[in-house]
Amino acid sequence: MASALDQMLGRLDAYDGPEPFGSVTAAQLLRVQPRTVTSWATSRQLSGLLLARSIGWQFTKADLGKFLERRYYTALR
Image (cartoon, rainbow, N blue to C red):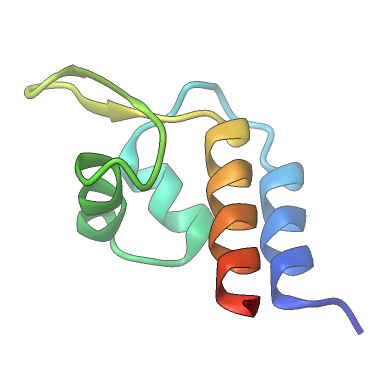
């Protein structure tokens, strides 16, 4: 049986849309609210690029993958 991390990373691998993508797409991939993704980015827990306040945060699959692995392995300690 696949772990929760494997399932989330599988969703990221299956994503074939344009990169970088915004917080709405990141939230859909992580199955959280866009406000949560923005909060993680603002608090520097999630790497991303803030282009402008009117445009918002931009992320890559690598950004989300590193974030998930860091959070997952920290939770196991």
